[in-house]
Image 1 (cartoon, rainbow, N blue to C red):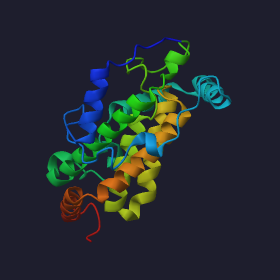
Image 2 (image 1 turned 60 degrees about the vertical axis):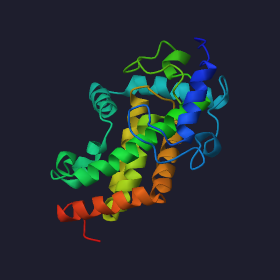
Image 3 (image 1 turned 30 degrees about the vertical axis):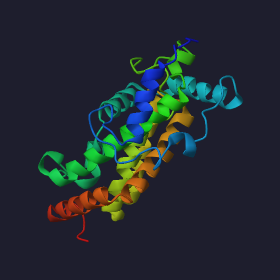
Length: 240
């Protein structure tokens, strides 16, 4: 197993300090949640210890997936991996769900994305779990370009579930299909061997918590109401 060098102390200090202050996330957005609102280490169990029964079972699951996945499965999972925005839910809402034409809705989900990215990046820095292909280089992962010690929790999964948690509140009549789509999106991380099962499970839980905590923020709730009005006017959801 590769031994990663620890982060320099000044880098850790900058990361923790910026999150606590609700400062810009790594992708340029602004997080609405501080560690006082949501600290991944306080709400998630630690990942399975290396060599533990669960860790061995999770690695075996990835090898089993590798044997049974089809080329179509891989292509679909890779497509999901490249799509890091609410477009993953477009098929459920219809062709009018075009964020280029829905500025209030785009603003809302930009807020979700920036906050989710900040919270998850903090969690990855806290837990520093090796990616599957670091644990077992023989795995045929779809990509091996991600940060080596960033497996837990799954950021793609937390993104899908944080957005699903908000979208399900906007369109409660479609909540079931929306959350099911998020679950399929998370499963794509197993298909591509980007994450272990507990990474995905943690991403699900953290994503839903992010959505819940955001709804308690006045600025976010105001943006939510604006998006709801816009989506209703476009005929995408029922009027409140």
